[in-house]
Length: 242
Image (cartoon, rainbow, N blue to C red; front, side, top):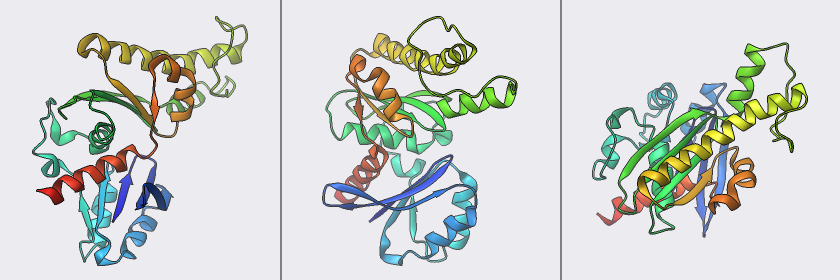
């Protein structure tokens, strides 16, 4: 079984070896044809399951996939779940799968921060009702926006200065970019707690380590880099059971 996650920036594929996930493919989404070419090398018995937030890549793969190697996770796949969400047809299913993956390791409500190109902060109840969430710019996207929009200002690292307010242009930018991102995440978590009460918090994505270092002890945060694949595996297990 191969699980494929097509995100905004990367395409990644894994398989399970014992209790561990093993990456078998990774490609930055620049030359889309390379991704379709890799899919075409899969054996028809690979039982590949994929989720995609990029409709153009899904269409490209489908056009090349004459043997229908891939099973896509989409709205029909999760129709039996309770969706507390007004527009399920536009939902990025990686968000749903991350929450489902979190629910496989706890019996509590969950909130999942997926800190990638975009940062999503989503909730699922202990009864596996998807509650919805937040889509905001990721940390790297905020940095690129400032670099593009204010080219006279210096490029800065992702550090949070020890002193507030910033006492240099670099420190002011670090507070403005990194601090904005951090305070936004913290504020949304507080809103979840105010509305729904306690929950278990998980983080995944490219900036997961950064978030864990700054918020981990404050929120008893759990890092799970393969949480989307956990969700895909759980969905497959449920399908096999039924």
